[in-house]
Image (tube, rainbow, N blue to C red; front, side, top):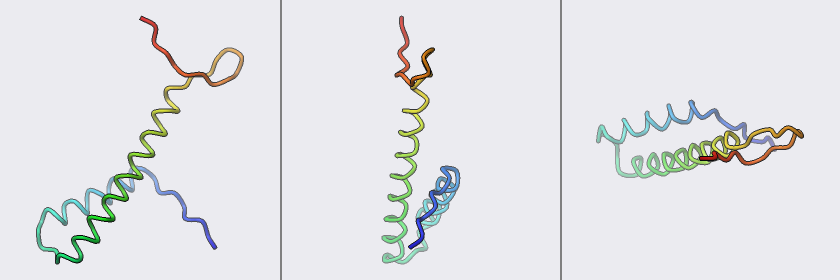
Length: 75
């Protein structure tokens, strides 16, 4: 069985925007609209997960000893 390749964030956002425009148009049958809404929610979750992962990675810094540590702003 092949593993599903993870899509790029930008690709998912573009697809999500297309679904939203289609649903906003209002010319979609109810069953199709429900399927598209479900797909949009899955895409939104995947995008959110990728953003959270990116935020965690950005908030880490490489310490002088070569280990990753949480980035803390000292005031």
